[in-house]
Amino acid sequence: MKEASGKSPRDKLAGALKNLLLLFGVFVVGAICLEGLTRWLIDDGQSYELEMWKYARLVKMRDPDIGHRHRRNSAAELMGVPVRTNDFGLRGPAIADKAAPGVARIAFVGDSIAMGWGVAEQETFAHRVIEDLGRRGRKVDGFNLGVGNYNTTQELMLFQAVGVALKPDIIVLAYFINDAEPIPTYPKESWLDLHSAAWIVLNYRLDSLIRQFGSQPDWKHYYRGLYDRDSAGWKNTQRDIGRFAEVARKLGVPLIVFNIPELRELKPYPFPDVTAKVRAVVEGQGLKFVDLLPTVESLAPPSLWVTVPDPHPNGAANAAFARGITQELLPVLKELCSKQVKGC
Image (cartoon, rainbow, N blue to C red; front, side, top):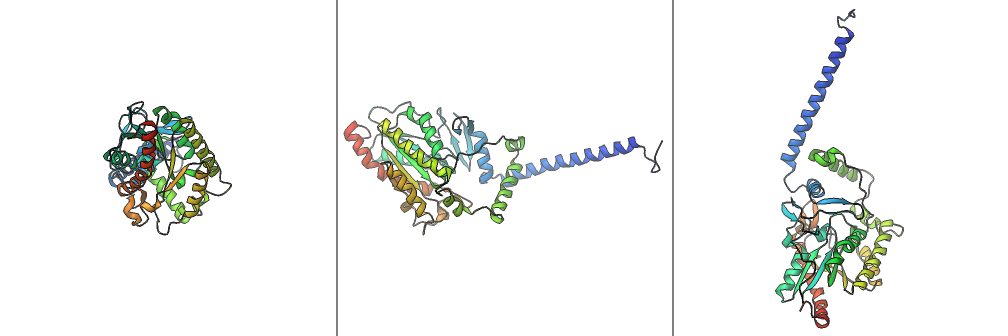
């Protein structure tokens, strides 16, 4: 029997299903269009959030011990420059298991700054230092253990897992202010996290708005907060700088810690107190601490950034850091030459 409206319950159900299917179809078409527009209009090879997403998908991999690391023999174009990894999962060309006779090998340890986020391989300070020392007649080679989003604990773990076996003669630890962060969390990734550029952009922009207008601390307060006395990340960093020093002593190789400045403000620099805390810990372990702020502090900060929104060091900043690192390594190589006939 039909109701007064003239439609039976079956007809109403069929109509509701048609409307739901229509809405679903509109949603799917809209989502596909949004994804296409995102990749066409926003994905220009310089979008920080999308390039980091590609880095995570194409170069990084989860690791049960370290958290994450680079895939072996991977390649991607990130921030407009090619990024490749070798048999050891390190950015750069293939490297032998050990250096040739008479060659001093340098391990460059750090996070995305040491890895060279946003700059070509030959512009990284690791590559520039080896090249500069070679031009000076020094027999050296090296490898780059830098991985994005690492803290000091992960840097130590990767060095122990990969770097020790490559038998370095000098260890360069590039320390950045966010190295005192705790180990990153690794939530289960959804299908959208893995496949949708639009989803990544939406989440990143929403997070930026929350940070801008919400109650979360700005970048200065955030960084300084990492070094509170009771901060778990800072406690771990202090512990693992000590462990790194012990590993270097057991290997019988010098470990030098180079402090990379935060490039958003340089003169006056907003974190001299943090630098002093890190220096005290490093020197308390009997290690040499070198602050690289003087190599760039007279320059305009935006001139040193990969892009205006992304203050990772660009080629010019890496060149300045490389000059500072090279000058500190020359006397170390002189001693290696006299004692072990390496790096001469």
